[in-house]
Length: 463
Image 1 (cartoon, rainbow, N blue to C red):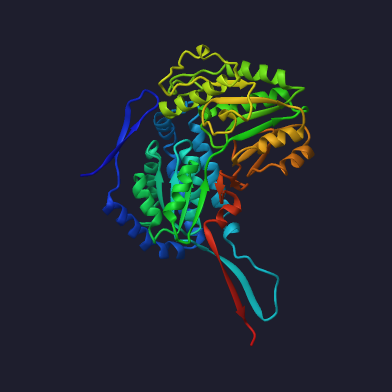
Image 2 (image 1 turned 135 degrees about the vertical axis):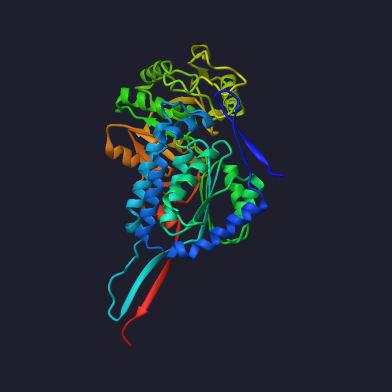
C-alpha cells in the first residue's frame, strides 16, 4: 500500500495537501534512471545545458504568482513577501548560468615548451539535493542549477512542509525538455533518504538543514569517499558601532530579525550596540517592532505570519520565558499583537534586553521572532561576543568606517561579513560557513568547485 504524508498549513492548521511517499520501487527506478542519464548529459555541450536550464527557469517563472500563494499556505510567510522568493530564485539561477563558462573553464598554467597542460573540471555524477522549508526555492536553486549546468544529474528531495516546490521543479524541467533521468524529484522519509545517501550511485550530497540533520547525512555517507555540502544552523550577530547611521541600522535590523518570522538561516538573532547609541537604538527598535502586523499571512496588510508549526513557536516561547526568569527584560507586550496565541504557530515578536551569554536565547539557535540586544563598550568586546558561538554563517557590522568593517570582519569566525546590511545572499559571492554552520560553498564560481572534480592533463607534445 502506498504511504502518504500530509502538509499541515500553519495558516489555519488544516491539511493543505496530501502526497504519496516514494516506495522502494520508485526510489530504485529514480536512481537507475539518473545513473543511466549521466554519460549523455555530461557529454552535452555546456552551451546546450545552459540553454536548457534557462528554459527551465523561464518555465518556473511563468507560474510565479501561483507559486507565491502556495508558499504562503505551505510555510506561513505573508503573501506580501513570498513573491520575493521567486525574484531571488531568478537572480541566483541566471547568475550561476551566466558564469558557468568561466567557472567550468579549464585551469591552464604558464606555457611550457613541449607540453600542453591543463586542469579540466569534470562533473561528479549524481547529486542528491536535500532542501529545507524556510526558503525552499532559494536554498535549492543554489545547488540544483549549478549542479546540472556542471553536467551532473540531480535527485531533489524537499521538506515535507514544502513538497510542492519540488513538484514545480519537476514541471519546469519537463517543460524545458530536459532528458529523462537528468532531473528527478523524490518524496521520501528520513530512513529512505538515508538509504539514498548511502547508495553507491550517489556521488555528492547537498544538504541544508539542522546540525542534527547534517550529522545524519554524515552517518549515512559512512565509509564512502563522497563529499557533502552542509549548510546547517546559525546564530548570526550584528554589531552597531558608535558611528553607525542609527535610523538605517534600526530599520534594517528589525527586518533582519523578524522577516519570515525569524526563520532565516542568516537572520539576525543577537545584536551588540555601542553604549553611546544603545538607549536610542533600543527605543527605535522597539517602536518599529510595534508597527508590525501579526496575523493571517494571506492578508496583504500582514508582514509577520505564523511560524512553521506550533511546536517551533513553543520552543521560542520557552527560550524567552527562561531568559526572563534569568533576569532578561522583554520590551514588547504580546498583547500588542492580538493574533499571538500560545499553543499556535502565531507568536508576537519579542525584544529582550539585560541578556547575557549565560542565556540560551543568546547562544542557541532560536529560528523565530525573538532578538536579544546587549550593550558593549568597544570593538574588542563586540568581537569577543560575536565569536562566542557554536555557529558562523554571517555577521553584520553597522558603521560609517569601511576600514573598521574590514578590520573587524577579519577577526570574525564567520562565512560572510556584511557592512550596513544583513540577511542577503549575493550570488557573485561564495555562501559558506564555519564551525557548526557546516562546510562547503555554494554560489559564485567557487560554488562550481564543490560540484566538480579536477582532472589534470599533462600532454607531452614533443618527443
